[in-house]
Image (cartoon, rainbow, N blue to C red; front, side, top):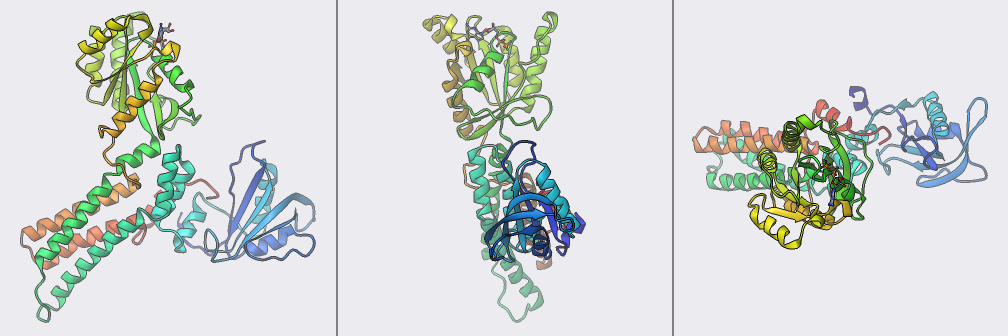
Length: 464
Ligand code: GDP
């Protein structure tokens, strides 16, 4: 990464997904002082098309030495500073597939560009002051968004909705620091520090820090999704439930590769929330080990889940084994799914429901007949909104890095309060206040180290 901190070189990358035979257009993006010279060397625009910024030229890409035709393409020129990186940027819009774009990329490198590292275009946008760090992170989130809600939150971040309050908090801390330092340096010339004002300001800053920190759970939820485990005895209908759910109209099944361990089975989107259903149903038990494994597996699944769907067989009722499994998972929010309702008369179902005290949230399904999925989703959304799973409901949502920095700011600010309460000299107040300012600055990038940049931009794909 360290080499990327120098923005002198010209970088190039394929900016579109590289999938053979898919996508009709492939884009090679070049950024840096050499970008336009490279385009001039490779691109031939017939007629009298002007090489002006923010125009699209039509023409051919040719090998500069042999003049061999590489592709018929469009060229987009964006001169600095009106570009994504604030440098000169050109984009070759080639035919899709992998061959043309790779050849064009190769030619750009031969003309002096260097292959871009993941996130390097966005890193340059940050280093050149076009984006702050939260905005840069929002771009990665937008690209990786798994639901419309996640995309909305990323867009809010991109528009500075997170950076603004953080910057404001930092400014307030800087103001307090200035007041204190003035008292340290020019004690005789100034009226004494109004301690009550400082205390009130700190209290306000802390409250806001805490409020923003509460969005971390929501950020996590939007980013990775709600992890739901379906648990229950063998043959109660867990697989059938998952099948019915995946096939229902409201659930958009996304075919994303599992990000975590082997337990991830399906990705659904319910009410805008991405949901990972952790598979506990897939493996078939051998008869003699049934109960033991069932219990063990339920415990394991629940330890990874935000929400547990405890499934029982309506015909069998609430059995001691169901009770045993419930004991393993009750530390999580649990929804009881009473399946196979089609096999039991209505009055018996009512009786069963009233007999079971816990879990409180109960729904009836007939998974094999695709019935009850509506109720299931309603119950999940109700659990999410009730605050069991999610405290905050805000436009903004912070990620793990931001939460870590914000937590450091919170601790430092509490430390300042303690220092004041202990009546320690002013010098001591400033130490922790500086700590808070540093931590807040790391979030937006006003104070930043290379390792922080590394951590952020390594998440990106190449060409972004
Ligand atoms: P699992 O072991 O918990 O995953 O259970 P399965 O989903 O494999 O279901 C076990 C059996 O119950 C299968 O024969 C299913 O067809 C049947 N089954 C599942 N759900 C229902 C239901 O709602 N009604 C009825 N009548 N049968 C069901």
